[in-house]
Amino acid sequence: MEETLLKDDLKEDFNKSMLFVYDQDELKMRQQDQMHGNMKLIVELFKLDMVSGSIVKTCLEELFQELSHRNVEVLCNMLDTLTTYSVTHSRKTRQDKADGITDNTKTQQVS
Image (cartoon, rainbow, N blue to C red; front, side, top):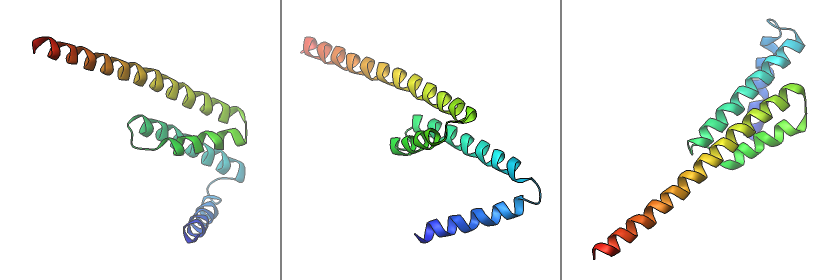
């Protein structure tokens, strides 16, 4: 609870200072661009097993909340990356299993 309040306070202070530099619409657009960049980073970290799938799921759910043109674009990119990773990862896993079976067969033949 305290962490959420602190985050809200920091965000509010940041937004106040940014209003001197940008108008409200431009500030919102920049915040969304930053959020989308963070989501892309999270997917890349997921591919390296540095972030759990529940975090990626939360990002996807956040994008589904408001289906703007930009959110749909980021959503498609994230899903494309995740699908490519999933296919590649499952092929590698199947190949590793096949190699393990081949190695076990060779070991049994030698004995």
